[in-house]
Length: 88
Ligand SMILES: [Zn+2]
Image 1 (cartoon, rainbow, N blue to C red):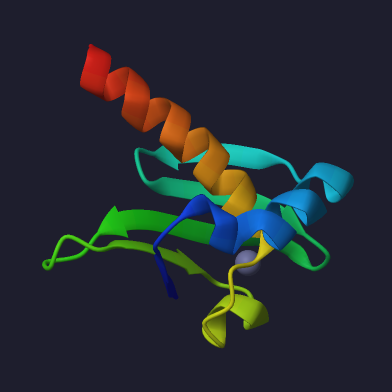
Image 2 (image 1 turned 30 degrees about the horizontal axis):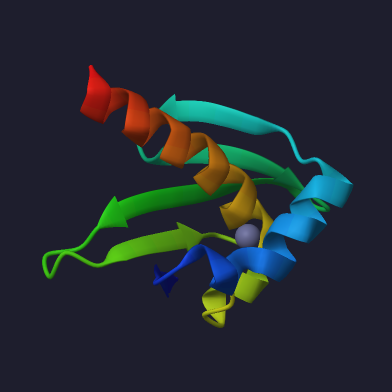
């Protein structure tokens, strides 16, 4: 799990996601499944009780608090959906 402070923090992960192009499956708002080297990982994007945006992925990198490319891929979908919700 990591706290999302800015997009620059995700730059490497985004570049990796662009190269690998994982499949992102929508579960519900804030809840995604992203394909990885060993099957699908679950990515959860949410705001915690202090208002921090947190991203949780079930892969090893995320367990160590690193932004992974699964999170980057899920976030690009999540951010688009969040914008659409705000303008709806
Ligand atoms: Zn991951």
